[in-house]
Image (cartoon, rainbow, N blue to C red; front, side, top):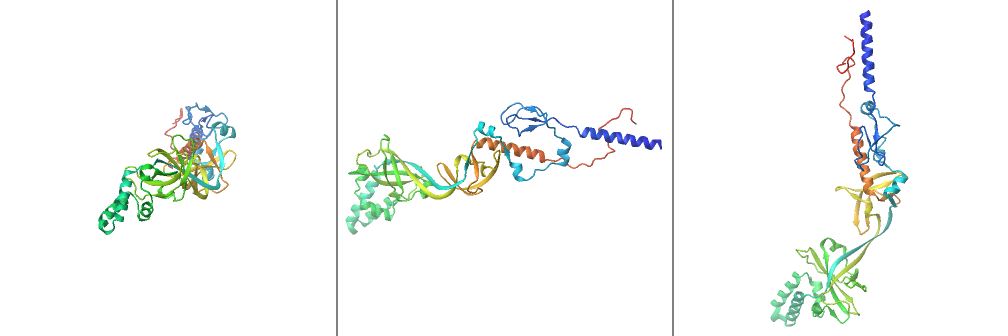
Amino acid sequence: MIKNILLKILLLSFILIFLDCSNKTKEDYFCPMHTDYHSDEPGTCPICGMNLVINENSKRDELNDNILGEDFDDNESSQKIHIPLEKQRSIGVKTQKVVKDILKNEFTFPGQVAYDPELYSALVEYRESRKAGSDLATLAQSAKIKLMKLGINDAELKFWTSQDPSILLTGRSKNKVLIFYQIYERDINKIKIGSNIFIEDESDTESISGKVNGIFKLIANESRTAKGWSFVNDPKQLLHPGMFIKIHIPVEYGIRLVVPNDAIINNGTDSIVYKKISDYDFIPEVIKTGLVANEYTEVISGLAEGDEIATGATFFLDSESKMNYRKETNTSKKPDSIPINPMDHSNHSLEGGK
């Protein structure tokens, strides 16, 4: 009977020692600047490099974290980034409402006042052979093929044959000036015939405007551009044959749901914005984008009109979000389930016990 009592006392001692070892807590260190970052060991913050300081008011129980596995309330709370107002001001966080507005863009292309001897020769050859009638029908067809290789289709050919071809060498006819400009392949379908254009010359002393009169259909192999052309009025004769110019073409796409380009972070697969859900909290939202303009981007899905998003310090918010994700991933990792045998005391020792 005494033996049984001793065994029970010994077993109780082992259990008390096991619980004492298991309930030891680790010290908690955090970054004074990035208060959401914690560590079990002293060191430096991986975001800003500041020394971590010990948290005297909070101890984390390792046993409860690993075995009980504290779950996050929901997906939104696990992604939430908490930033006090004072910190938002110090790092430059700015916000803006998502609105529906006219999406505008402006394309800029390199151009030149007309001087095109090759087009001039092909056009003169075609016109003269056509005047000669059937006798030079073969020559006319050959000249037409040359013009087609230069990007002129049948509709444009009819227009060009009605013009004085000398403008292709002089660049002007009285106050009317012919200009050519290179439209990048990716932008060809965005430029419409009749769109307004504004010309910027080297002196940049006066704005000259006009409209897009046509776009040749040939894409140059090396530059991957198509040639656009316009007639503009130049009564002060500021433009001269062969002069290099810049062409600005504003385009409107109508009313769209838009956000500033600076608000969007592209990670290679997704477009992400940070939506404000309270005075202190932001969450990442994946959005589907459409047309991209100089300052704004169309939002097809992922946001609604009136949502408030971050437009400044988005890189900081993205860094915080990634840090939170790594913390949550590490916290959510639970050790393999290993049955605890209360009689297995291989890791403990008792002085005087047998």
